Image (cartoon, rainbow, N blue to C red; front, side):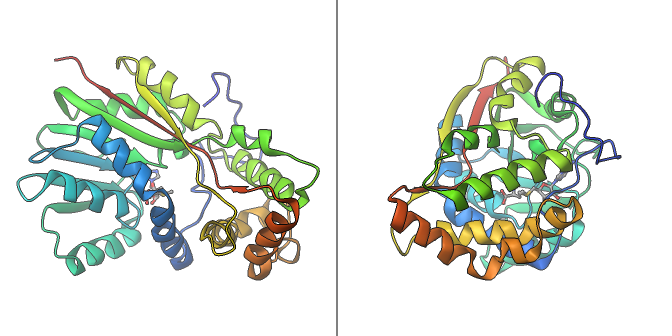
Length: 286
Ligand SMILES: C[S@@+](CC[C@H](N)C(=O)[O-])C[C@H]1O[C@@H](n2cnc3c(N)ncnc32)[C@H](O)[C@@H]1O
């Protein structure tokens, strides 16, 4: 997302690979991710003004977690249309919606940048998805064509570049994990700075300056779920870490990763930080 973002020589396609893969493990990881970041996403939607009766377009629904939060906020008189380019993961999202009795959500398979959608929306939102778009400004401009005047735009994206600030001599494992994460996302062509980049994306797409917030889950308790969640991130990243020659399965050792992180926290007395996320929201002119 940096202005002069160089195409990575190791990625030949125009768009970023979906770095975290498309396995059933990745679906489980998305559900766990929502347990960790769900509260901050709900706060974003409320701050942005998502309310009863609204018709909301959600970009990159994955297993459906953000869509379920939206469906609760818009209520039975509202509607959520969730789009994802991965048709298979939407089967999981649909089934989860049916299981929880939600009738105001529809999931549509396709690339959100080119999909034809009928009717205007009161809001367009997305979580952890713009970082995978080769041209976020062009993508957002396209999404805005589906909006009514005065509509709400709200996105939540990771900001990996801030992770570098956590390097510390007492936490060699954390230092290694940060280095692997930065390198693998960079090699895959994803935008490492999409969180901060939301500002430029919003204003260059013609939106007013967004309200922005930084969210970072931090933990040190022995039972904190964040250690296990980090291990699930690495299980999803492992195929690409190996493909790009950044690490081997033995070096990552996913099975013991959560307990090794917890041990490092206990010994170093430095809490563990999950990836930083930035939220941004604005409204279109009326
Ligand atoms: C990290 S997942 C996040 C899923 C969900 N938003 C959540 O927070 O649980 C990103 C999702 O965006 C989808 N995606 C990426 N590019 C897309 C595009 N151009 N159009 C629609 N979906 C896209 C991927 O298939 C993936 O399911």
